Each structure stands twice: as C-alpha cells, then as structure tokens.
Length: 511
Image 1 (tube, rainbow, N blue to C red):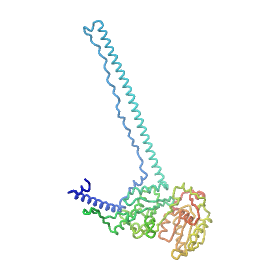
Image 2: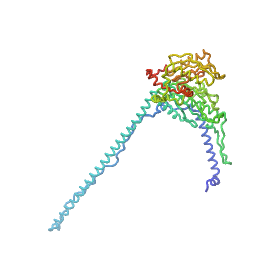
Image 3: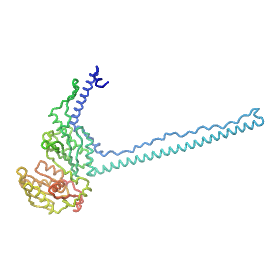
Image 4: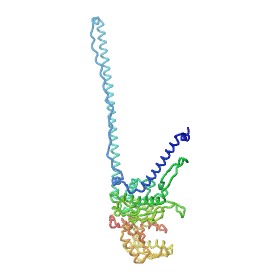
C-alpha cells in the first residue's frame, strides 16, 4: 500500500500529526539551544592544560605482545612391545614352535618400527612448532620495536614543536593560535575562518576574523505544524532581539578569542593582540561583494588578564578596552581597523625566507641617511602632488629620522601634515610616536604621519589610538612606493648584519 494512503487509514492520521508536531517541537528546541550557545560563548573555554598541549601529548609505549597460544605437540603413547606367547602342548610340535617364535619376532619388529616412525613424526612436529614459536616471538619483537620507533618519532616531533613554540618561532606561534581556535568548538554559524600574522620582535599577533552575517543567525523562535494544510510554519524572534543576539555574539567571540590565546600562551610569546572582526557582504551602494571591518581592538596581555569574562557585559567590556565599533554591529557599518597588515608583506614569514626576497632593487633598511631622506620626500611628494599638495623636508638626523611638512589643499581632509620617518632595523617604540604627536601639536598640524622601515611596538599602537596620527610600517611603505612606480625591498636581517647589529632586540627597544 502506498505510504500516503497508509497515513490516511483510521488512526494513522492522528499518529502522523503527532509525529510531525513532535518534529516541530524538536526544531523549536534546537533553534533555542543554538541561540543559547551563541549568547553564552564566554561561559566556557578550553582548559589551560588542553591549550598548552595543543601540539599533542607525548605517548607512552603501550605495546602488548601477543602470546603464542599454539600448544606444544604431545607425543602419542608407544604401542607396547608384544608379550612373548606362551606355548601350549600342541605348540611344541616340530615346526610349529619355530613359526610362533617368528611371528612374535615379526610383531616386535613392526611395533618397534611404528614407534620409531612416531618418534620421528613427533620430533618433526616439535621442530615445526618451535620454528613457529620463534617466528612469532621475532615478529612480536619486530612489531614492538616498530611501535617504539613510531612513538619516539611522534614524541620527538612534539618535542621539536614545543621547543619552537617556547622559543617564539613565528610559524609555530601561528600554528598554536590556529590550534587554540579549533579547540574553541564554537557553535554554528561561527567557524574559525581567520588570517593570522605574528611579528616576533614586537610580540604582536594580528587576527583577521571572518564573522558570519546577521542573516546566518538562528532567528527562528518557534516551528509549528498545521494538521489541516500539512505544512510547517515558522515564527521569528523580534528584529531587536536578532540584532542584540548578533552584536553579543560578535563581541563575545572577539573577547574569547583574545582571552583564550593569551591564557594558553605559556611561553608568553604574545604581548598584544590586534583583532579585526570582518564581514563579507554585498555593498548596497555598488552591488559588489566587499570585505569590511565592523569591530576592531588592540589589547595587551595585562589589560585583559584581570577581567573575569564570565561575568562581563560583552559590549561594555569591549568598549572599556578601547575597542572600535558602530553602535550596532548588525548594521554592518564599517569602522577603521586599529591596526592593519599588508597581506603581501613577506617579512611576517620565517627569517630564512626573508633573505630570499630580492628583486634587484635597493634595501631600504640599509640605505644611507641621505638617500633615505630623498626617497621619503620623493614618495610623499608624489602622493600629495596628485591632490595639488607639496612636501618640504625640514631636517634629517643620524638616528634615521627625517622631518617633513606636507601641505594638503583638500578643504576637508587636508591642511598641514607633519611627516617623520625612521630608517630603523628594530621596532619603533612609543617615544617616537609621542615625539611626533608633540611636534604635530607645536606645529599646529592637522595630523602626523610616522613611517618606518621596521614595525611599531604594541605601546606605539596603543598611544596612536584615538589621535590624529597615522603609523606606516615597512610593508605599507613598500606598498606606497609601488603605488607610485618606485620598487624597493626591506631586508631587516641583512641590514642588521651589514651594520654589525647581531644582538637581540630588547623589550625596552620594542616599545
């Protein structure tokens, strides 16, 4: 009978209705559970032990040899030697006694031969059994040795990763962060879609985190089944609740990602984290897909260490940490990131790879002060000339700094701009940013620009936040040069080697 007719039989319609209503109830509970999970992201995190063993725990050899269970062959009992026959009166007749004796001797010979053959078969069986036992034991020893070698290889790999992690090797630190994010086990629609960059000298981790869209959220409040129409209907939570859920989720995943990364970082490789929460959506004005940053924050380890995230209001905590976002994240309003990185910047990979970057052009980090001064003036001249502006170099100094004044005629964004550049082979500290800010104020400038061949320390970024200051690192300087057809490269390691600067960069110098 067709299934549709079966459900129309007496009693079956009621059964089907109850079954569908149960399905609707389960869906309602499922959506509620998903919303609950998204609204309580800060309530659970991987343990410190789990995160500190992100590379895996060392194994202990646990090989158990299989016993050789084949029993030793048992020797069958020998047939006893025949008893000598007793001769009767008639057996003593001539010729008969001799025949009986011969029969007896023949039986004895046959039994002896059969017993000898049985002995040979038993010895052969014992030899084969011993060979099989020896082979089994050899196979077990070989398997045990192979397992021990496998465990040692695995453990050595773990030890190598742990050593690289503890020494702050850049690629390994990035792998650690990715592993911690996978441990987070966020509910859908969250997933760890991130781009990571780590700058070893400044101990700065940069995270570009792809956030879901508001339309991806589980906004279904109830699912109902209509027995008359045989259809399901869904009711949604209010738009205000949907926006609140989305905003809370975004703030929580930002705070938890930062907190988890710091908590599991036992070697303290990371001092500060820049987190950009990005969305990819269709731009209403252009109709094209674009990626926009809707929340951004720069947090140091000390700033978040004493915060109990399980009891905070996510948005209030984010704002207290000087995070940048629109009043409602659900509107997908773009905000300027507190820190960006050049995704083509090869200096964020391993040091040995950096030295392979060689397009035949000059190494900015090793230029003379005079050439660097000329280059800075030239590139900013080109940048502002397009808007009718001009750049004047006012002074240069042996510490790698060069001061210039730009005049931008733009009535809205223009004005007097102080430009300072540092030809450094180490991170620029906060003092240089303070100096720029002071110079800009004393000059009555609308803003200041600080450009370096190296990078900026975390304190430098923190100081520049919320001030009319722009910090351009080496990668961004190269991008500006290429924009105006001026090709160059930055090889910090080679420059330090050429200058005889082989020492490590101190924390104080990192700013």
